[in-house]
Image (cartoon, rainbow, N blue to C red):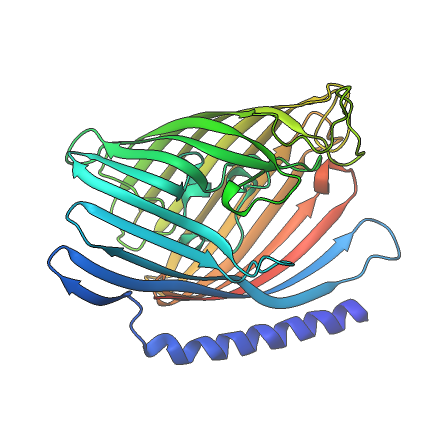
Length: 397
């Protein structure tokens, strides 16, 4: 009875969110340039994602209860501008991540030089060139939440502070590439492989350096990091990427002087190597993305057997496929996805199946998303399942 009442409550909230999004649908959401004079400009923008989330665990225990919440999943304003030709800067922060003493979270903070032919040089906190799913903005994803293959909690580096090069080899951008060398942190948690930016680091984060790059081939012209098919033109891409992260041993808070882990659920991470292969296809309203990545990770203490680790090491493997079809072009899209994760210490693979609908009021600028996700063997534990329901209203300007 309790679960039924909660489900009805969730439906009512979803209907309310739909109603709220209808009003701003009449507003143009293309960003605002508040000042421009030749090469000088100032631009303001941002995104708001109001999300209703309900989870229904099924572990076989009578204590399992359905819970729900309504919150700002992301609330990210930004300021971008330039005073000089070929230079620009941008900083973006998130007030949806307010936690404890951290009232805001810095997302992007960088400046860029664009004076070289076919190469941009970016310095600051910026996206690391790994995982097509991870590099696809949250505002341009088909499912409400990121899959294992692009989640910073499971091996994909997040924004990192350093130097980032992006470019292409020909004017038609058939081949694009990216290279980065940066400072990067890992939040030690044996259930995850959680990369975080050093700009917002906590006191127990492992610190280190990360180097990596990617190459993408687009046989029919560049396919950007965005899901869904609005153009209805034939586009395809295949990409490969790799990186290496090494602990600089400046902050191993869960390892004793003798090299033994001092916490049963948190172990300091020594090194991570990641490999990715991904691809995507767009045509006539159909859209499909697929990715496989694998991360080889070692803990400082070689005896740790907990979470994803067995005897201080793991090969964390993620793969996903998701796709959709524009039932009503540029207005209504049906979507579905499947993803899987395995690790050395998992009893069974953790699998998730998703399905949903996307209603575009102003394409990706104003949209409503519904996703229902069914999880099996959560954290690799047999018979530990979790069903989740997401409703998200998005406004981008």
